[in-house]
Structure formats: C-alpha cells, structure tokens
Length: 304
Image: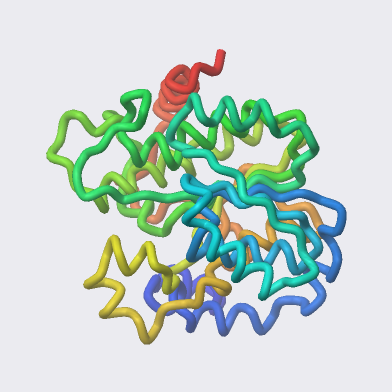
C-alpha cells in the first residue's frame, strides 16, 4: 500500500492540508497548462463563496470565461468585484438561478445557447430542518441532485465536461430508499451526506448516458469555507488548524475541467486520483438500486 492510499484510508491526514501538501509535490507544474481554457466557457453553480468562488478563480486563471450561477445576483456583487481584482484579465458573468427550482433551471438553460466547456455542480445546502424546494422536493436532494441532473440534461449537446462537487461524508451513508427523507427523523448532516451518495452513485450512469461528455464526481477534502463554518461550526473550530484552503479544495475540480489528458469518465476523484466509491460494505448498493434511484430522479426532474 503506497503513501497516497494510506492517506486516503486514514481520512484525517488525507482529507486535510497534510494530504494535499504531500500529494501535490508529485503533480506536474504545467498541468493544467497556462491558457488551456482560453476561448472556453465554464459555468460554476454556488460560486458566491468558498469552493465555488475558488473554482471560478482557478478556471479564470486558465483563460476561461466563467459564468457564476448564484441564487441572488445582488448578493454576488462583492464576489464579482473580488474575482475581477484577483484575475483582472478574465471575463466573469453573474447568472441568477436557484438550482433547486426546476422551473428556474429550465428558464436558465433556455437562455444559455453557447457551448459550455465545463459545468461545475458546486452549489450546496444543509438546512437545519427538512425543507422543500419550489416543486416540493427535499432541499438537499433538489440542490445536489435534481437541479444538476436537469441542467446537465438540458445542456448536454453543449457540454464537454461535467463535474459534481461531492463530499467525503457520503462514505458514511448508503443509497437511501427514501430519497425525499420523509420517513425518518430529519438530520441535516445525514441528509447532506445521503444526497452526496446519490450524486456519486449516479455519476457512472450519467456518464454512460452522455458519452462522449466527461462526467466525474470529486470530493475536496476538508476545506475552510463559510459553508463549513456555518453548517458545522464545532467541526470547523476543532479542525481549523488542519483545514485546506478553498483553493486547495478546488484544485481537483479545476484539474478535471482543464487537464489536457482526458480523465476517465464516470469515476469518483480526490486529489487528482480515482478513489473508491465505498469503504464500508454496509454502504454498497446493487445495480438494481442504483437504476431505481436513477429512474426516480429523472422522473422527478421531468426527464423522459
């Protein structure tokens, strides 16, 4: 077992800045190459802060025109100003769309007619109590799975690469039999992890559906972001000395979007390497269960 695998299995060193620091020593300095995204467009959901903002900056440095997809354009004004100071030569566009609202997703996709090199599904939520989207779906499922699936479907003929920003927390959860979380007492962290498990489980099916578009899921490790501090303040305080920066957490997302050597599609990634989708036997799902979830989500999105 090599050092990279040991770091991955031990979680704490692998997911923190320690793992990033050790692994990144072996990465080529010119991959992705400077200017590799010049003339290309990337869409980043949830780009107002944290990993999304860092991803937008990373893609822009490589030459991409970056569309920041946010729920509230006015609240993104300071983000836009920050990014323009950080990457003054880049072009940023703010687009308003609540990814959990399927009607809003349809309206947004109808107006986006140009090719999109990379679609980054980064938007995330962890409501303190069970909350429903505009169409009556549980909010973490709608935000992390349904809206992204629908947007990807509507833009599929314009796309080259699709990346889902998942979470290592999904390792703790099996594929849910109650995706709308109606049956058990609601726990925010569990709802979040369950929806991230759904993302990872459906990634291979979406990749097969969208050939030759690259589709991948990744997890950023433990990164210091406003979302983490707000959703899990105790964990954030306890681990702060070891947390990655948002830029370190976003590295693999940017790499998947921009590396010249096309990554293997349908896989789960962390720190530029394919990782197992399961470490616990209790979380493994059958092909039939995965297909059932795929059918449920596509039906919920109105995808025939």
